[in-house]
Image (cartoon, rainbow, N blue to C red):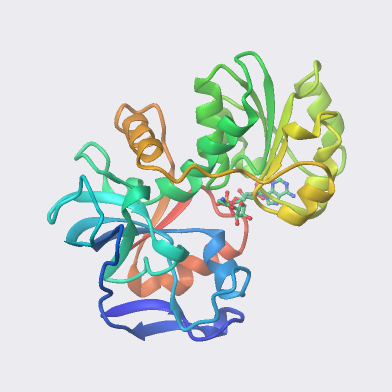
Length: 300
Ligand SMILES: NC(=O)c1ccc[n+]([C@@H]2O[C@H](COP(=O)([O-])OP(=O)(O)OC[C@H]3O[C@@H](n4cnc5c(N)ncnc54)[C@H](OP(=O)(O)O)[C@@H]3O)[C@@H](O)[C@H]2O)c1
């Protein structure tokens, strides 16, 4: 079958279409005919070797599709089911057929289109888990660094629904979007901390960083209690600063809950672009650029 991936670790020049066999579902796995697949920064990080996958490998860590085969030790899923979920080993989604981890998969109802379901496991799932990890109460204030991106958009919406005040750091072009989801938008760059103090005169109770590097260093000092400093963009630096990475709960229950929120229109993952699989390279370049709005999706 046709799939998009990389031949060896490196830059975009290592990407291309691969002719690979249809995988066999192992224990705890489903095989699905892919209807839609999410594009994430983790895909180019994987190609660059951050996760130890040397290639050749098919990119794509989350999909929605129709179950075509079920591995052993799987309960609750059958051939023909419409599902969405995460791919084993964070690879294999950008293809006509892909494996999905059954324990990190859920049924998809007609109320949630495949393009929306496909982007829930990584970005919205991380947003959900970050809020759970932080354990903030209603009335607390959370700063989201990178509020207009794939993870930022769901975290703003979930936090607002949980009664949390959100200060959303984003470029001015995304301020209307971020404000539309109920956050107080703040531009990054010189004077950021003054703008945050003006937006949240009582201070912030927690920081969730989606950018890393100097942008993380700048906002880290806003929380004295470093157990309330989280980043998924720069794990070494957040640990150095006394904070932590998000502990993921890759479960069917979390995905089912997120899909119910989408179905009831309480959560919009904001899919801004749907491209054919033929344009996988362009889609990944768009995300690798680091300033994409919302989510990009591939359709085989
Ligand atoms: N579980 C995990 O480990 C996990 C899961 C998901 C994501 N991640 C990581 O988390 C990060 C974010 O993922 P994502 O999907 O949300 O990426 P994304 O869609 O690219 O969003 C990142 C956002 O940061 C904004 N940004 C860039 N520079 C900034 C700065 N200096 N200050 C504030 N905002 C800035 C960008 O937009 P503007 O500059 O246009 O405002 C963009 O909206 C990535 O590094 C990804 O690999 C990790």
